[in-house]
Image (cartoon, rainbow, N blue to C red; front, side, top):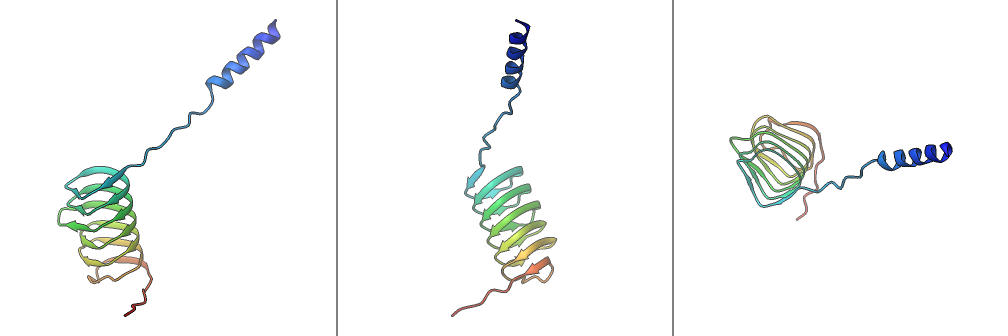
Length: 126
């Protein structure tokens, strides 16, 4: 009887202590982000304008505005026309702005002020 009770307790512990599997919902935004604060997105298709403390995994659009602060993007396809932007991989150009940091640039820095770790030159075809 004691042995059956021990088996029952062990089985009960395994059932209650199993790890919970969470389904992480992707945060996707289609359209412009204008004057937003303290948000995280997995995918944004649109422009980021005058935002603060925004983190985006993949951005397809431009970052612009004079009131930007602490914009972090992992992968971006578009142009930067703003201040205070950090991008890991940028497929586009830096046209305007200060305090811009890019780890890998696939485009041009027309400001000459951006901090670029590595640049890959694209071949221009006519």
